[in-house]
Amino acid sequence: MQKLYLVGTGPGDRELITPKALSAIKNATDLVAYGFYLDLLGELGRGKTHHDLPLGEEIQRARLALELAASGKTTALLSSGDIGIYAMASVVFELLDRQLQGQENAAQWLEIDIEVVPGISAMQAAASKVGAMLGHDFCTISLSDLLTPWESIEKRLHSAGAGDFVVSFYNPRSKKRDWQINTARDILLEYRPAETPVVLGRQLSRADESITVTTLAELNANEVDMFTLVSVGNSETRKIVNGDKQWVYTPRGYKKKLV
Image 1 (tube, rainbow, N blue to C red):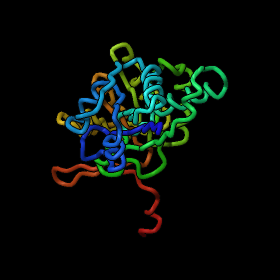
Image 2 (image 1 turned 135 degrees about the vertical axis):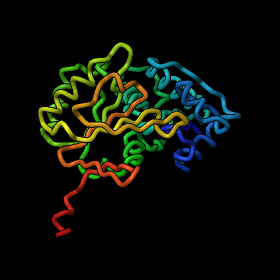
Image 3 (image 1 turned 90 degrees about the vertical axis):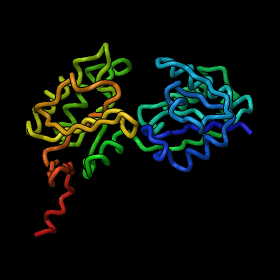
Image 4 (image 1 turned 180 degrees about the vertical axis):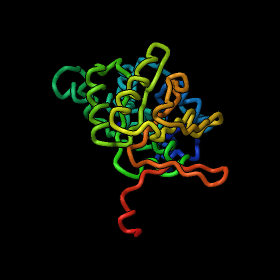
């Protein structure tokens, strides 16, 4: 049987890997992923053949997974978080789309039984650490302009601001991209208060996790890296403090029923 699992392994904590993802990993003979994600599996990956391709080789990784599965090896292609959110699932389906359009020479791919196994995303993990940040309408925006023109990203930032969405930023900063998050901040400040709560979740659910609650006006690129998930509240998002605890939530409008 030609089987390919596309598996989201969650933000890092093995307790946040879903039972279905664990089953897929268990069933697979071959695991394909960026090496760091394979390392996070620990003993869950033992006894499997590992195929480690570095960052930047996403297309090669997807091709390899398809070829392994087509050859009869039960294969799991892994991404952290949810594999369908800024991750490898879309690359696989883009390659399949190209095959159907006659742009690839890999008819064997079309015989593969593909199963997508979702995972807990970074934005969900960050929201859970502070309360209920995603309690109302929200969106995600990747600030990486390596594949998407900045003009398109900037348009989406204005739309998110005008729509008053809670916004979670993926790929907020790298060594070569250090200005986008500050520009995004300035755009959102055109639409919502300076004191709007912002949550910075770094290395979420991992041993060196850190959670910082700041404000939109105080958000700065110096506090952010590629391991950080940045969530910006909407105009109604609130921070509440109870002794040494603080929570951030976005109300849905139930206050109309609480009078």
